[in-house]
Length: 171
Length: 63
Image 1 (cartoon, rainbow over the protein chains, first blue to last red):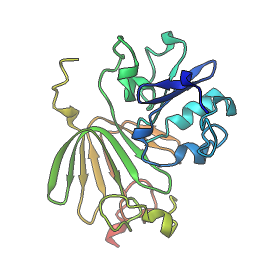
Image 2: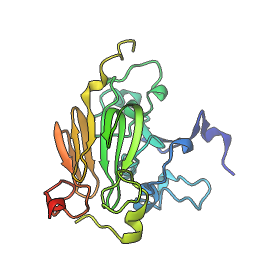
Image 3: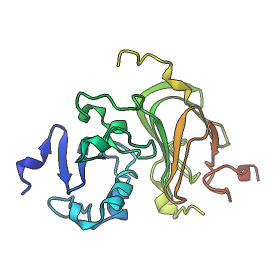
Image 4: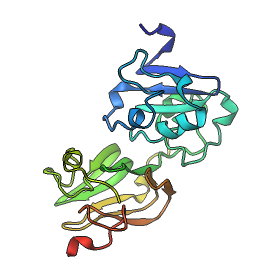
C-alpha cells in the first residue's frame, strides 16, 4: 500500500534527495519508455511502482524526459535551480506542468512544441501547432499526436502499433 | 499569462501525401536513439520506414 504522503492532485509524487518526480496516470499513452529504459526505477509490477533509489538522479531525469506526455515530469527539490532549466529538459514541470510550479511564472512561459522520435516507433508531437493531413487543417491546442514512421500503419498517418508487429527498427 | 493569444508560434505539422512529414516553425526535435536534441526551423521526417538517413526523409519513398 502506498502512503498518502505521495498523493497530490492528479496523481502521485516521488522524491529522492535531489529531485521530485510527478506521475499523472491520466496522461499516460503507454509509450513504455520508462520501464523499458529503467525498470529499476519504473516497475509497473511493483507497489509503489516508482522507486527513485533505483538509479542515479541524472539517469532518472534522462528517462523522465523521454516520456512523450506529461505523465512523468520532474523538478529539482532545490527551488532555486528550477528557475533556469534549459529547454532540452523537456519534462521539467516548467514546460509540461506549469500548474505545479506555484505562483512563480517559469522563465520560458511558452509551451514549446516538442517532436519526439520514438526509437523503433512513432513520432510524437505535443503542444500548440497547426496539423495538416489529407484534407484536414486543424489548430491543435495543447494537443498530442502520434504519427506512423514505419509506413505500415493501417490508420495512416497515425500510429496504430503495427511497427511492433513488423519489427520496425530505426537504422 | 493574458498574452497567450499569439498565433500559436507558427509550428506547422504537415503530412505530405505519399511523402514525408514536414515540420516548420519553432519546435524542439528530440531523437532518443541518436541522442539528438535540436531546434531546427524546418525538417522532413521519413514516413515510409525506408530512409537510410533516419529519422529524416531521403526520398527513398519514391523508389
